[in-house]
Length: 158
Length: 212
Image 1 (cartoon, rainbow over the protein chains, first blue to last red):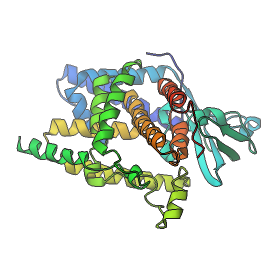
Image 2: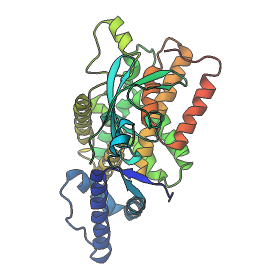
Image 3: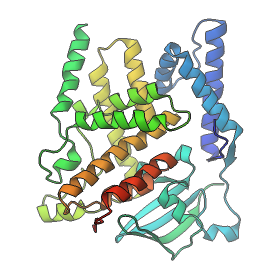
Image 4: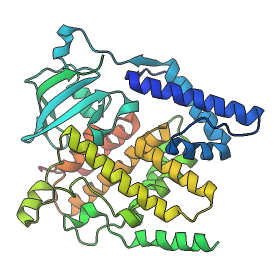
């Protein structure tokens, strides 16, 4: 696996740790007891467990993926007061694009979900916003020019 | 076996169902959902093979099932709730990527998820439990981007859409490209797919670039 750093919010880290422990438990029970433990309540996760029951190779690869993340993560923290005027990881950025308002939160790749306004720090827009301040205009130009005007920056993480 | 016949018969409907994004823009003879699935699957396989740590079998299955829910939910776009009736206003809106408040993004996203999940559940309800669970788990992964395959495929799916938009623009230069490129630059973060987009930009926009 690649040795990259995964930037995570505290909430996401908790979620991943919980999943990792449940899957390790599940694998152990499957190998030792030959039966599936009743570890999780969520309907969605239970469905995955039915899948894992059939696909031990995928179960192992998911455990490895999680292990790799948990060995190479960095928590996204609120920056010092002076740095809070700049866009950084974890910042909520109010922008104006083509006369319309939008708001992004800059997150690591594992938490990116543009439909919910969570933009990856490795995406072209995420990258371009990093280090900028209120009043700056960020221009992304190829093939179409789009101007992102930064209207506000706040950090709601602890 | 009877249930499988019914399932495949229903899936066949995707060959006739047009993708909403093209219909609302008035593109004639536009692609069907099945046609989109076909090329997305090829892209997921071939581009996925270039990426380290991707389980190709999983990503291919994900590609094949990712839009099955649309048989019942329809092809939902971010424009649906704000599309004006007047043709002029509609054309104006479609030239931009829609922007919503955080609250509205959450509401629309949940609404879409619920409708599509319900559609998929209806389609697969009579399938064998093992298969049903696999399809649902794959779809949930695609939706939530939980595994490396889910995150990669979400972008491969958008990449196919971006390529199609670029091809339609080649035929008709009045088709605004802003919404696709704005979405792409906020969504893609896979280095290999970003490189692919750069190549696409170079290939298609060598002679002329879209202005809107």
